[in-house]
Amino acid sequence: MVEKHCARGEEDARFIPGTGAENANPSDVGFWQLVAEDFRTHDRDWMAQGFWALFWHRFGNWRMGQRKPLRVLCSVIYRVMEKRCQIRGGIMLPYTVRVGRRVKLEHFGGMVLVAQQIGDDVILRQNTTLGIARTSHLQDRPVIENGVDVGAGAVILGAVLIGEGAVVGANAVVRRDVPKGAVVGGVPARVLTRDAPPG
Image (cartoon, rainbow, N blue to C red; front, side, top):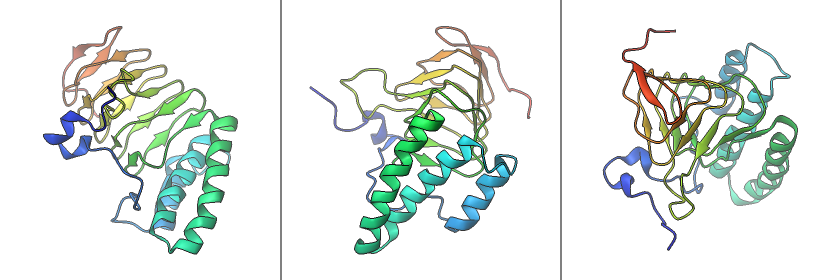
């Protein structure tokens, strides 16, 4: 039987799956201010694939706050451009993922970013996978807290919490919660140090 919800969502609202029925962009900033911030976060590079993946993610959310005739047109545009980002940039980031501010998709290619939530000031690198651990638990997806740094090739699966300021090493496979400020690495990932230095 396929699980329809994340059981962990009963204890922590961050694990409740997004429905996609409303604009889930950060509410403390307007759409164009958010886009400008993403542009600055990606070193003001118009050609950065990470910037465009985030732009269409933000657009996909923004359209849900529009009236139906405009929303229908924007939905067609979103579907085409979101698929183009997947094909051309190798980045899958559904609009139902709640994404915070100043998130940087550092390098492009092989990125499957299907989390419940990605916090502010997070860095994700190439070949990162965020998603489910088992097809019988389709809503068990990770929550990435603020300030997390994820190395290339890292895999984070299931309803796990990556604590604020944690560092996930390159090619680590994470299936358990990571404490705040910890550095984890290996397969399966284990805590290497705690209280990671800032930056």
